[in-house]
Length: 250
Image (cartoon, rainbow, N blue to C red; front, side):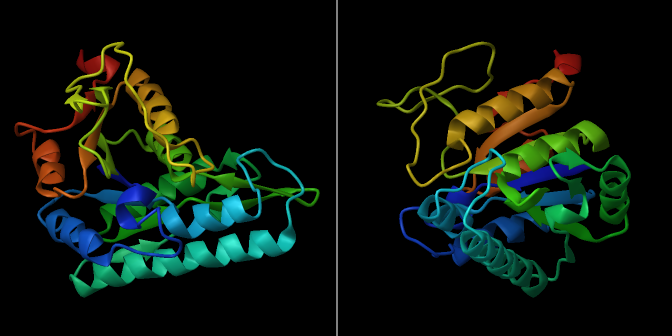
């Protein structure tokens, strides 16, 4: 099984509010058709969820945020999810939308429900879930990132491989020269952040990927603008991207 995290920066234009990159998503999906293995897809919020989260000053810490803002963020993520689902079905794939509220209670993953997602993936459907605003209790809500969801799923389902699809080639050791780190072994990567990101951007992705690798699974960062690289990473061909090598694979 493979878990694929589609970053908000690749499926939307994060510099422009509410702007999907449908052609990019379509090219990614056409390449995913070449994968004959159960997969689960998680997508970020990009210029949908993140735009409204910033506007209403909502973050990953549970607090009493503006309830109208909560409604708008929730609605915008459903809208973006529908765009992704439509592109999958148009390309003869079988997406199965699963909102994070189906398998997260408060801020805790429901193990039984996540195992069920694994069963759905093995049936020929492709579970598609996403970063969202979640109810915490006592009038509190919080933003749950797609990156965090990817870690939850990885810990419980133990997939063969996890791929973060980005708007960059991977992690750079130097931003000016864009020198790519092919395998992360304690280097100090330079990270550029987008101000329209309340979930930690590249810093969070590196953190989550490192945590997953410590559990023994390989994690790849690849550029979604060159989606054939996703297929190469999955098929163990020469890859262009950054590998976080799982401890059991060292």
